[in-house]
Image 1 (cartoon, rainbow, N blue to C red):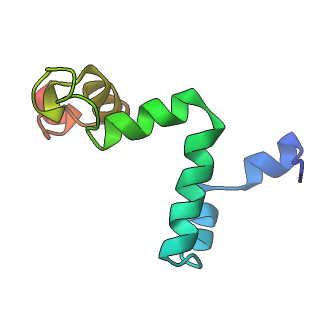
Image 2: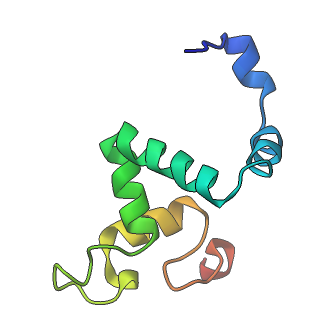
Length: 89
């Protein structure tokens, strides 16, 4: 496994990651998401909430009513109803 120093980590940006993602095909992206999914429970919870999975099965209604969905929407800077966080204030 490659290990990066703190100096290396600070030099890598979202643009670098985004450029690498452009090299992936559909199967490669699915494999990447599967790797992230199996890596941690937090990743699993994030993906479930991001895609609104599991809310209906628990009787909580549409994904917008799912607590996890609201949490990820707020983290991304948007209100759960789709409004921009700045507009909601």
